[in-house]
Image 1 (cartoon, protein in one colour):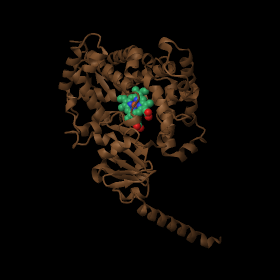
Image 2 (image 1 turned 90 degrees about the horizontal axis):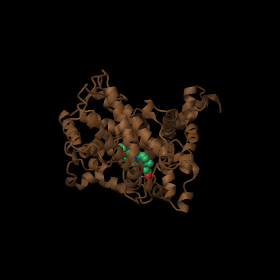
Image 3 (image 1 turned 45 degrees about the vertical axis):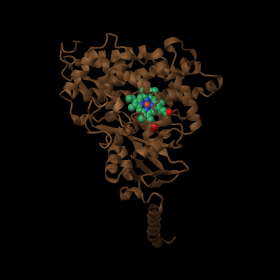
Image 4 (image 1 turned 60 degrees about the vertical axis):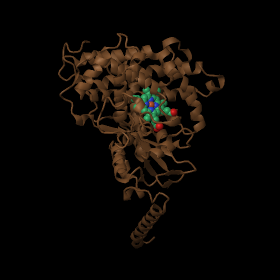
Length: 494
Ligand code: HEM
């Protein structure tokens, strides 16, 4: 082409592209959905908020402005309407998890968290269900969980008493929750609570997760990073391999383990028939062991951290909770904790406002489409719901933005709307499989803390700003810490 025609050709191509983009944006079946004008053309604004850790706030603000159904990107719709949420998450709805999950999880094969095929997922779920049932956890794992929670609180107390800065509860809850789920997955403790820091395997797991976020949100950047030969970058892009190799330990303990050395997979296999056994191959155990650690560590740790922070911000509530815990037996049995009214009400309230996974749970609309609020969303579009918005809806929860530790004291008064909106552990067939384990850790961690660290206060270095939520699928405090102090002599039981 003669060089004097090159520029006009480029301009013409650009104009044609813009006309096509404009045409398809305005004739698409989604063009009538409410939302900001740019969401018809680009996902760049949404991606910007995801990468800056502010997706939940951005989408929530769009719901406040545009209502319960909002187009947030050309092929993505956010739904906060309760009837829409029920349709998306109900069992057998046909709304499958989107590709997002597979990109996010750092393994070669999709594990239970990311699987899309409903039959394969249901089979894996059945296999896991026994091991994660409340009764199995109580019989086989309560003493491990309890001793780790006791050690975590002992470490918190050691750091908190008499020191100016105090103890970082986020650090100790993270080591506790990671030690718990690592022990269950691998069949032996990583002893991170004893070491006071995380192991190289957990470093690799976190790097693999970071690599997954990049793969999900910025695939081109992820590919290019492979060619940058610095040690730091290579650690991130090759972290998958470290995680995969380490999984061999889970396989060995599944086969050889007895008693405490047996892991959850060993228990699953022992309780399954030969067909089910065959469905759990060695590479699945590697995958699942890593995934369970990701799903079961920061989630519980962050929730416990916000619990301490929220309660310490309300001295009267703190005193009442400490009194309730002090009135229980020296053993703090699980059944006592399950029946402790204020403890459980506070935990529900923490899960409402600060549950660790309040963000988008993306699903793909099935062939019949989704009709909600008078709009029709066609097959193939990605729809997502976020508990952050529903849990803060004041037409559902009165004074929704206020942390009210007594809100759930009498759960028989919960309205059907409240029950439908309350989804800290997700819903339907993909509801959190670790929720009984989470509740065990939350109850034990909180009760032991408020028994042994009575009168704790937030350290003077803490500000509300540091506890603002950073949202990267899960939430975590922006300041990456939560320091508390206990006065000498003030920590003993009354
Ligand atoms: C307070 C703590 C926790 C919270 C708030 C939480 C929250 C959630 C949520 C919202 C989901 C649904 C995700 C979706 O639909 O996309 C989920 C799924 C899941 N969670 Fe948890 N979780 C917690 C603790 C745990 C623990 C301790 C484990 C350990 C095993 C765990 C393992 C899983 C797994 C494997 C899934 C995927 C289930 C499936 O797709 O079938 N979670 N969790």
